[in-house]
Length: 296
Image (tube, rainbow, N blue to C red; front, side, top):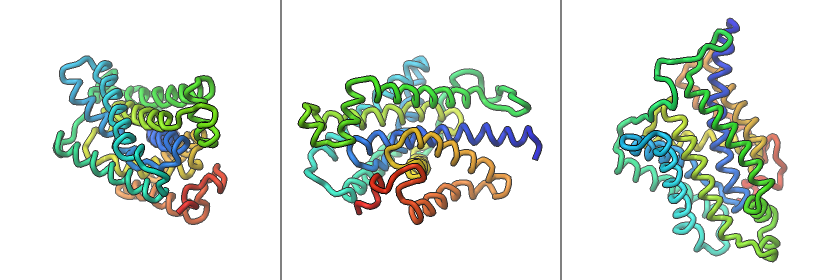
């Protein structure tokens, strides 16, 4: 394998890994605040991309993306209000089943609204055939946008949780919800905000990847599986480790193409997930107390 080919695989893996890391961070935001594993996270990406595509036909692209993010945030809040908030001390298994049902509901709603056609958002800059040459490898300008947006999301969330009152309140709910309530924090509001924030991140990522991967109503399930794999690999609740795990999975998938047919790429993440769940359900960077699977 030449250096140019190696670097081409590397760039592809980093781009895919950044997407998986964003999905995993969405999982972690909700898990940290509520203990819920939200399997509708992949649908947030596709819903945001679909809304962005529709709005871009009559709005400038930045406004279409912003509106798609806001609309998906509203959907996230509605999910909490309609399906989560009214429950009293539900089991983890019940919550997981609810989020799976919500993902199916969102997916079927998208099918009804947008049908089965594959759609794509316009490239933020450049065109489908434009590319940037780096060390002999070629990368789409849109992939650079994906990498940049991923980096901004990670940095912004780190600052948000460390420096803002709302971020600290969400962390307090994660550590001890009862103690947070005694300190005057309204835990129910933090839960709603976690769904909104997770949905917003997913929608922004969905708009960013749409020009590269295109967008179809049923793409959310496989993205959710890969994001969940990364979240488990990094240890549920550990967003910093999720970035490392996401890049690792992306690179592993990219280089697996050299030895496996392209059709088997998705099986790599499934195999990794099964191995992790069997040997170390708390993740490579997590602790066993953080493992949600021990609560079943």
